[in-house]
Image (cartoon, rainbow, N blue to C red; front, side, top):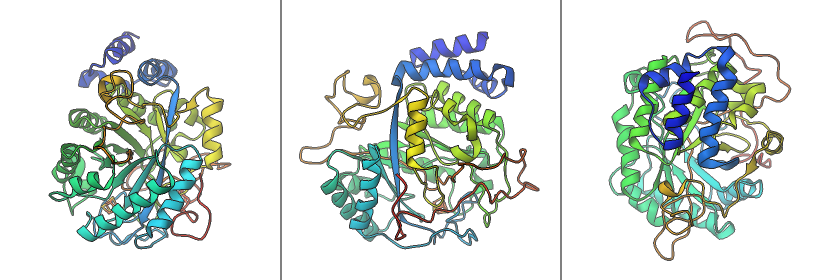
Length: 409
Ligand code: SF4
């Protein structure tokens, strides 16, 4: 396919495709699907080899959010039967993080529900980062705490955070249809603020919320312009008790095309396979490793992922390798390492001031993906209205942080 040759050439040069080319990827036929994966896989291997970076989510505060993001199980008025708890103690969070690191994660993503942190919240997160550093010196730490106000990004940086996650989630045009309590511009401003404070920016999307191909391309091009270091790609988990319950729009092939499009538009960026991968990619999950160079290990914020051991087996079976703590994730021109490890610590995070530890992380405010092991075949694609509830696919997290049970890592 001429399209794929063009996209590979541009991807290997780190160039952005045109909007039409990105749209054409989403419109490819099932006959061409493996060619699309192979082409985007060449771009992925050029920049990231066969390495897979593992990230581990710790939900510091679950549910009880005053915002109304329609995709989120933690939203105002959510009827989803998720765990609800207020701030974990620093030691509890550090214990959960340690399980992820022991499972191979090089980044810990500290997430809290809410519109944005208070100054007291930042103190708590700072204490948590210190507790995590004490147990896991080299781990990257990312914070994901919602909208930031003036000076908060700098405080997080000073506390030892390496990265900040805040997703755009969908296109500017669609944003008002998924949230009314804050807007797209608020999200963009927070990503810029994080970058401006020297934090590694992480910002991504959620697919499968009723958006068009144009919306998907719009949000990915907007992300390209914001230039985050990492882009998590979530697939909607339509929790019962949320407005998007029953919205099953994605097929495994569609999910792969979306990931391929993101890879072509953001060729040299850490593309992270995030919430919803198990329920939407299902048996095609291993193919997604040819597109994304990063995944979440184990469970998500409010839903279960497949067993951490199954993640590791899948990576090995597909011929990929878990990225080590001493390997820089990003290509040298993005990490500032000049090919070595000069400007940034392992993981591709900007150099810290002397005496500060190294870290970075990222998570969407709601990457929640269920356990798919031994689950029945999925329902056909549904829509916002009339989609079938799939309680068999969406499993609420009942272990790990906020429970007395060991985490999945
Ligand atoms: S996405 Fe974040 S801000 Fe929105 S409802 Fe969920 S926890 Fe609250």
